[in-house]
Length: 481
Image (cartoon, rainbow, N blue to C red; front, side):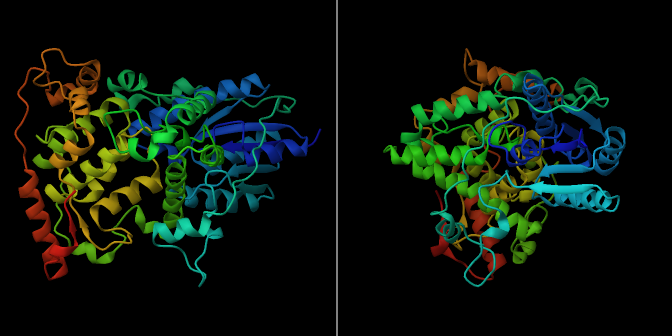
């Protein structure tokens, strides 16, 4: 029997449409699937790590159904893989690529360490539509603006679908595995874990069903409905794409097929998938996107960097007095997700009205989002803050009052999440109160707060600060959506 190959799964927890797995099957040799609770996993926030644990559990069941086992180990990635190679006789370790700085540093260390010991290492595509270095400007550089990037890739076709294996070839014996329960991946969720779990859609089969339902029922109206937090107008697939429970290529092919069938919203859905790629394109070429202002001139913007200030605390707890902002922050804490339109409004309110650094919001989302994605979270925050790459130089100030009137006209979204003032709050609003730490002292009977910073006041504060930054007023280049 040939030496086994260790297949190191990370954010690619599926069997279908999997380049690494498909090529491994072609070798005909025994395959040992591995998942590591390594230094990168250890650094994740509470909600992402909790959701990752559920995905690992589901993937382990899927592997069991095709005659394989998912071997679990905890510790530094290089040490764990060295030990597994010694125990199994494996002379090759394969994995799917990652693109954020922490993962790239880990992978470079693993590759150098194993290569030095004569162990083959290979990395494969699979997380993105287009590899970051495969999209270049005419001068050979990288794209800093989405629209030209979209034009550069719009005629590229996705890879052909790859079938899932019917059965994985097994080694003569399986190495010892940790127990997933012993990792306590839900520990950071405290009492909120049981609440958030009700809103999750976990695993490869569930992800595929979710895509099929979206295409059949909602993709036609996606271009308009996606902006309405009061209705179910989005795909919800960001949760599943985050852990690779469905491939980005499968979603892209579905969008193209729906467009050919005449679904008007399909093209907009395709553009959103490309935006996800664009975020990774930027992160790959400018890793500072995660940690500091993409535009260095924004280092002088007078943001507060106190994440425990009264204003930042009220924002985190959904008690700003701005109903749409508070509803969104409560949705986040109870479900681990937040509607995209609401993300823009809450981000604008934090960075503009409350004059708080985008990193405070970025880090809170990284702890609370079950669909946390390092590239898209960072790009989203820098885009709304104004410190990131953008085609338009204007300063965005979203008015949470007018945004509510436009995108939640009947108040359904706000009522769904704000219990105060309702004689019989809906289950969603009660779920937030059940998930929130007792130390916050929240209840449905307490009075709803007055705005800590009003819409007009916050806009004036933001514009004044921006004028100071630029050294001049730019009244014509301001949005007040």
